Length: 410
Image (cartoon, one colour):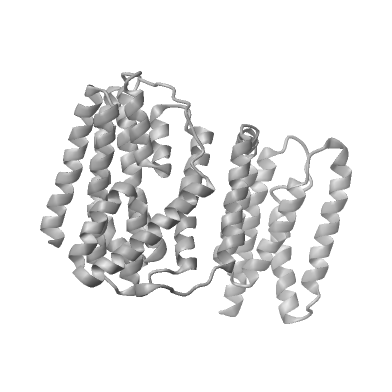
């Protein structure tokens, strides 16, 4: 059995090296230092040298890695005059380490690294174009984000403070980072691909804020009579549903089975509406190029304060008034932010303060109030045609949730 295990790992390490080498060979326009044959051999060398180091001689892996490094450095100097960079050389060293990881049973990590490496190598042109189109503010935002995650999070204490033990700095900052990551990824995608149409802005803008998309598109309806505005808003609402489905999983995996049915079914309803209306207006494309960076230290701190305040109120109301107080808070906080109450009640369910069913009800109530609040933007800033279309979506949303609560929970 041990021999079969080693043979399986050998094949696995060769396969991972092959997918990286395949990408390098495909991109090459001339003879290259390492291609579709060399990369699998390098990964295999990493595996075999680790095996020999573990079983016979500890220095084997170091000697092998040094030999590969020398070959790559030598190739770099040979190619230096062509100014090709060191991407291939670095990928060779990483491929060797992938073989080492496979030997040490890190199959998932080695596979993830290999696929990620191939992906980074494959999207060279899009990445270069994206980097060239970045604003100075985007670079500063990336630095701020790295500072928040890499510098602040590790030094925060992981214990509860205050009345009702509502304040855990590390737990709160982890939640802030989760939301910031989603917002920032949404912005990056929006800057990269989202300026092509209103539909793309609605889809990717929903990762940042469905409320912001509803507000912007409502104002824009005064200038543009386009059904894509309506579809863009519904897409943003659809993405918000997906966010609500996924966010609890980061803090409480048990919430997934409770939160999935109501929001998945509503998301399918939204998708069917979008598909039906888009089929009627598929030739209508309107450009929309207003994209603002949503990431700032102030907005992150504001969310952290809102989340902390909601956690405090949730525990106080739950302590004195039971589930009724929590549900009232959900209706109120949903107007401000759905993410905060979603993560708050999911954490409370994890700690046993409330049940998963109660947390699900609280999240649904927050989404209901948030939907009312977003439609209020449409009423105030939108044209009459947009109001008529969005009132149907609001009625479907509220009616569906009320029916679901009546049948499945209440």
